[in-house]
Every structure is written in structure tokens, then in C-alpha cells.
Amino acid sequence: MKIKQLLALFCFSLFALSGFAQTKEAKTAEFEWEKIVPLVTKRAEVENYFGKPYKGNIHSSRYDTNFGKISVYYGFEPKQVLYKCNPSFDTVSSFDISLTEAIPIEGLVEGLGWNLDKFDKTPRDAEIDVYRYAEKGIYFTTLNGQDGKELVNAISYEPSYTNIKNKCIEK
Image 1 (cartoon, rainbow, N blue to C red):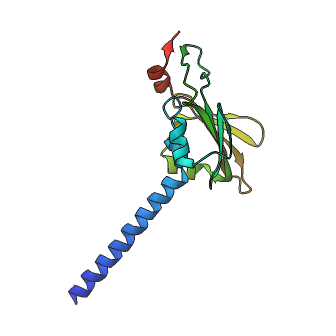
Image 2 (image 1 turned 45 degrees about the vertical axis):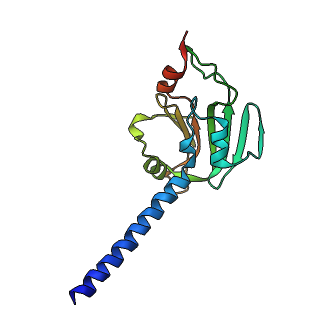
Image 3 (image 1 turned 135 degrees about the vertical axis):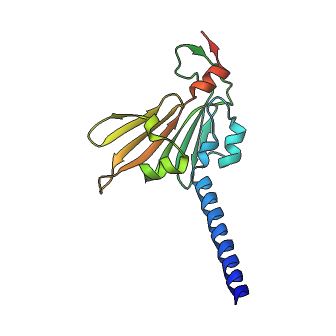
């Protein structure tokens, strides 16, 4: 009798672990853009993650993914007054994601491990708010869902203060 219970417990444990692994993989695939780091990631790496862009030129690439449209910009000087960065033409300067389907703010924050307390919230108008974490270079906009909950519809990444200090020269 105990052997059957141990076997059942073992099978249940394997099933639970495989479900956890699939969930972790799904979250990783869902937020695949997190691998892109402005002033660090090169164009070849971006193409390795998302394939060839459906539209692009020397300064930008656009990708249509299962979670939204990504616009990646290359070689532009970050909007920093105190530093001169001069990134190469194949280095990511910044990128934006227009989500195919708006994500509840709680799901995005939890999925990416963000601390919402670090973000400043600014109302853009009656329906849209902008969150920004300038130190990390992360910005996102929310709109009000039908149930009154905030839904994230677009995210932007610029260089973090750390990468600017490490990759750029003080003016």
C-alpha cells in the first residue's frame, strides 16, 4: 500500500515540476524583448532573437512578434546632456514595444520582476498614464480597461544610467 502512495506522490511531483518548467518557459518567451539592452546589444543579437525584420534600414528594424510590434533603433545618441555616447551603427540605442494585446499592469510587473514603487506615474490625459523608471531607462503607458484596471499597451527602453556611465564619456 505504501509503495502505491509513494509512486502516486512521485508521479504527481513530476507532473507539477513539468508544469512549473513550462510556465517558466512561457514567461521567458512572453517577455523575450528583455534580452535587448540599449548601448550593449548588437543588431546581430536582435536578429538572432527575433529573426530578420519585416522592415528596416541602417538606423532601425521592425519586428512583428506574437506579443506585439518591436521597433529597434540603432546608432542614435541617447538623450543625455552630460554624456557623449556615440554608439556604433549596429548598437541598439533604444527600442519600443507596441503590445498586440494590452497586459494588466500587475501581470507585466510580476512577469518582469519590476518594483512598481520605483516608477514615477504621470497622467498624460484622462485615459492614459505614463510610468517611468528613468534610472533603468524603462517607460510604459497604460490605459483604463473596461473593468477600471490599468492595462499596459506600450513599453519603451532607453539606456540605463549605469550603461550610460559605463559606455559613454562625460562631456
